Length: 415
Image 1 (cartoon, rainbow, N blue to C red):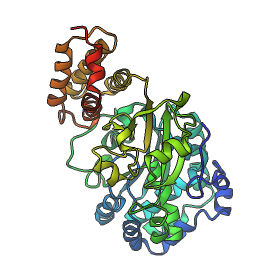
Image 2: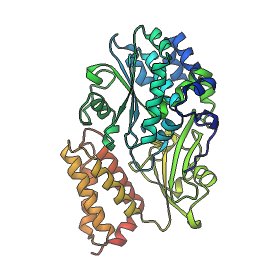
Image 3: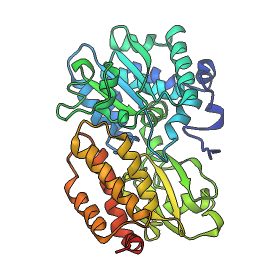
Image 4: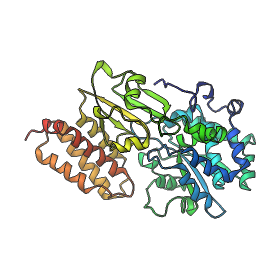
């Protein structure tokens, strides 16, 4: 998929791969140098820029950084979460392959801001090119002496390392990330305590998404107002939108945060295959509420999408055209969640399995009205029954599809 690039994160000249010298020649490192001069100004600057977490929740970044920065001196961890394994999401792998130094510099700035002495790049091992690029980039930062400004700012030595994730979907949940970095199985943990209080080996830990860190060097280099003005309306910055499904030009698009859904699908994505009509879109990956043709005017930022009853999530947009079965798509995605459950919480493992079984029965023309009733019953029983949000995501997409496209389900029933 050929991405359409603008002039912020993924400008062509900045796609230098693991070549640190080329990154520095383009102005890389300036944000880190500015950060090292005044570490206490970093968190307020990130707050003023209104940088959000780009891994799904859109949580204000400074609110994650501040408690780690305020924590007691000693071992602290910054983890870049590059596990990215949800269907329809492919932004982080591009950043890690083509501009890993932007990501690393952002994580190092976070270390300066929080006083962390451990920085971990946590990358999905299935992404071989990303692993290779990050591994070489990490080696250059360590071996060529470019960690000195960070170590001077934090008053001690800094460890920078690449840690392959488990490669499992559940391994991207932040407490599962911590478990993996500790050397264990990626079992999510109950919160509280939150990672900022007790993370890796019980130490204060900051976990942010790859794309979040990639925005940080630009903010430290150009300022908060520059970043805010990149967005549309009340939104700030740019966003990487992973566009896939029934569109003519699927790909990765970096656009102003707040770009309208119809502009993404029709202006950038070229419209739908075979001239079909737009039917729906799975927003932020397949774990959120479906948006329909009635929502094509929505601005793709966290608040605007939430106001329409869905979530922007990772920025993945999986487009469905008229003629494509919603029931089949939902069955496929819930099957993914079922296989991705770690099994730690029986309601999640058993519940997602039962959802998959019922959906497959209906999709293949073997379902009866009692199966539809059982689906609805599970959607009422399962939310909140797991330690993480996996089962909630599976329920959300089923419940949304039942609300928006119930007629498709009923048309497939045999009794």
